[in-house]
Length: 281
Image (cartoon, rainbow, N blue to C red; front, top):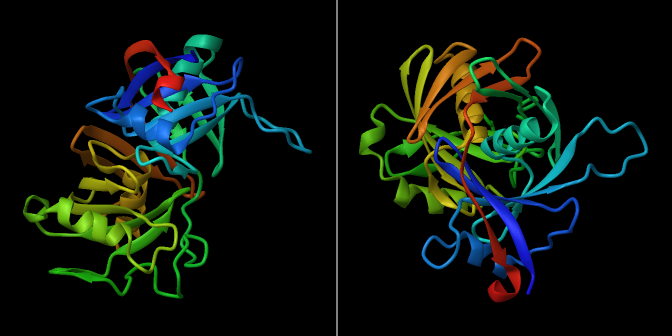
């Protein structure tokens, strides 16, 4: 038996199974990831997060921990905003300090516990260059040459992972279940993409739904909220500081003058338990 403890957490309903691999390494196969993530026969989650020691570096490494993130389909991703807040919440309890540096494959993400118990995460600078998002060909990242029914010309941005954002007049009329899987696997996205559909409700308020790459529709997506806010500002639709309203609740997004995007929102623990990884193999 290989018993591994876990904590089930969520950020606005975007839920995670968090495992600590610092004392005992946690190495999951894609089959095990899919089994754990299954909401009928497993624990159930959008992503699995494994906490590890900071990676070795030739220069000073400021991180408190390194995290690996796996989508429900077994694929590994570079960053996740809601997952970062959840891990930060655990680290605050463990270390009793309000500022935590989390290392991801997308870089270092600094987080801070605020007086209102929300967590602010510096998600870094958005990426607009087509080859760095990445896209398969050179296109205007403010308006891609993509058409799906009445939807067209989405923006493309990377927030540590690729995002495609459509702007619509009425989000309630959009069937995301149809759009999501087609755009996720569009030829322009060699690494697939997250798909956001956004409605501008005011210059400081965006309504957003997200189809997450490798997961499907989620109640919230932190990097998706950042991407939508930045894309909307680039299109002169909103201010640089906005509220993004997702199915699971609201995130505060501030695209600062230094180009760093600050995401602020809650993190919550649902329950803790243990799982036998050998049974899932």
